[in-house]
Each structure stands twice: as structure tokens, then as C-alpha cells.
Amino acid sequence: MSLRYHTVPVTAFQQNCSVVWCDETLEAAVIDPGGDLPRILQAVKERGLTLKQILLTHAHIDHAGGTSTLARELGLPIIGPQEADQFWITGLPQQSQMFGFPPAETFTPTRWLHDGDSVSVGHCTLQVRHCPGHTPGHVVFHAVEAKRCFVGDVLFAGGIGRTDFPQGDFDTLIASITRRLWPMGDDTVFIPGHGPESTFGAERRSNPFVGGT
Ligand SMILES: [Zn+2]
Image 1 (cartoon, rainbow, N blue to C red):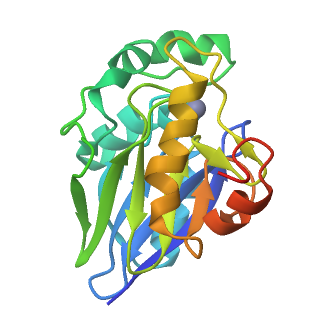
Image 2: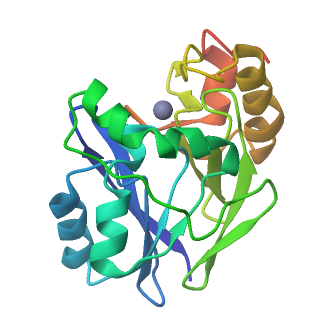
């Protein structure tokens, strides 16, 4: 069996929501349902998948704005992020107003995630790494065998996440990237929260913020 995925850019921020699934059981998880839920659910339906859970990298509005509605409508558990993002979850209604998003409700995660945890999707496993810096409770999901990592707003092709939000920290973010992402291997493809995919090796070579580290 192996882990498959399909990425759907959602919201005005074109946030890369990913539907991930086990190709043996067709059980699926949605990572970061920021909004545009009908488009996400269409991607699930087209592939004959059964959506079992919501996974969150962090609680910014463009990543988490659709979580409460989706969880309630489909009866899904909410897994993640790490609990230091509680204040961002609490602030989702204000975030939605500030950025001109549809109203977003707060929620209580079914399970907080911690560094070293794992999450099952069908017969596949995602390893959880805590990667603070963009937000304090940011986590990433690493599919070891598939050599894929869903990194949210930690790292982009040619860029890194913003660190000018409350409890953001530049040095912490750089340490998350170099100590927790780079060891996953140069040939690992990452799916960032915005923009195109890249590999850790390509970013180690040429990323202006973390190249040469
Ligand atoms: Zn973010």
C-alpha cells in the first residue's frame, strides 16, 4: 500500500489543502481545510474516498477556517495542531473578519499533536514533527515511505514562513527547518501551504533564507 494525495488550492490566499489517502483502504484525511469546502469534498468524492479525519498544521484562518463546519457536518475528529496554537484557534472569528474571510468558528481539537507522534490514514502512517517559528504550535506531517512532507507555512519553494505574527520567531523557524526538515532527506518532496512543491535538497542548495545550511 502507499499514501496518495491531491492538493486543492483554497480560499483567496490559494492555500494548498491536501486530501491524503491510503490506496488500499481508500480511507482519507484532509490536511488544512481553510475554506471552499465543496471543492475539497468534490475531490474526495471523485476518487471514491472515505473521509475519516481532519489534520491541521496550524490554526491560521486560511488553513483552519473550514475546520469547524467540516467537522460538524461530517462528524470528523480534528487532529492537531500542537496546543501552543490554542490562541490562534480561539481567535479564528477575529481572523476571519480581519482578512475578509467567511465567518469562521472556533473549535476544540479532538487530539493535540506532539513532536514524535504518528497519525494513521488507513494502513499508512504520517510522522508528526513540531516545527514552531511561524506559529508556536505548527506541526508538519511526514510520509516517510512516500518521501513526502506536508509542511504548511514552515517552508516554501524559495521562501520561508512569516515570523512577524504574535509568537512568531525567526531563529526558531530556521532551527525547525534545519533540524527537523533537512534530516528527512534531500530527495523528500514537500507540499507547502502556498505555491509549488519542491524538495528539501533544492531548498538546501538555493533557498535565500536557508540555502547552504
Ligand atoms: Zn500560516
